[in-house]
Image (cartoon, rainbow, N blue to C red):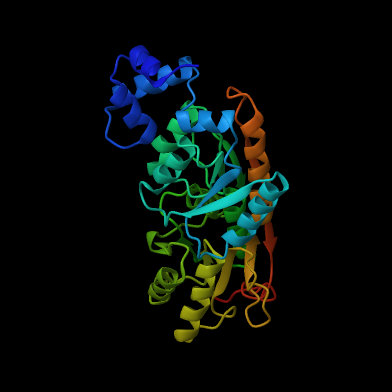
Amino acid sequence: MATIKDIARHAGVSVATVSYVLNDTRYVSPDKKENVLRAIRELSYVPNAVARGLRVRRSQTISLVLSDITNPFYPDLARACEEVARSKGYALNMINTNDQPGAVGLAAKQLREGKVDGMIVSTALEFDREALLDLVKMGFPVVLVHRRLDGLPIDTIVSDNEAGGYMAARHLIELGHRRIAFVTGVNGSSVNISRMAGYRRAMTEAGIRVFPEWLVSGEAKYRPSYDAAAALLRLPGEVRPTAMINLSDIGALSVLDAAADANVRVPEDLAVIGFDDLFFASARQIQLTTVRIPRYELGKLAAERLFERMTASADTERQETVLPVEMIVRNTCGTHLRTRANQ
């Protein structure tokens, strides 16, 4: 079995440099880092902590990396991961990142050190690319769920977010709406990008111009979405939206509150659609129209894929699975109001 000294000799660097790369403790220039990673691959090196686990026992733990543990989107996804892990005799360790740069890198360090045997990441953003790519190059088992990163060779489980954005916008257009705003989520996330692409496609097909004022950030959170909706409702009449799509049900709930505070009737004056179909969406006093995201199924497939990856050859081809979404029509979009006087 190759040693850290073998890696250093093969890469033409010091033992300390190899250690820095493996443990992510100091900056290493990109060229040297790539040389070390290449040597690790070519010599089939297994980091010491992991090797000890292979010789004695595995950690029997996997990690689930979440962007916001307070977001009610994640419990169903996490429950599915935990159930699959438990069925395999494993525990689930959850890590919250708040979408902060470097947080995924810290979670990755646990995997490199052998403290966990695999990692499911639901928080991937562009600044996480290098940390995730390093894990892949070193042969560690990683699966992305809910969010994807284009061009990254990692198994990925996502829902059809573009279709969801298209469904939501198309439904409103068929109800007669032409002034449809889109309250976005986490900047740079694949979920945000894909759902907005579906919205734009539906608007373009219908020949509807999208005004810049209609695209505002709500961060998929209550307060920012409330502020965004309130600002949209203050726009001049000719561009003020008659419908709003929010990237999340949490955000859509705040749109309903902003409308109530502005004495705007839902759905008579403003149609509202969310995403996720969270537990409160079907409550009698809310009845939110939404795009259902298969949260439990995402988590289940991601965990199952991770355990497959943990036992598969490192050069097995990576896969992407896209799950269908469903339009759930309730009262907030005003489906029963088929014609609009303000087209």
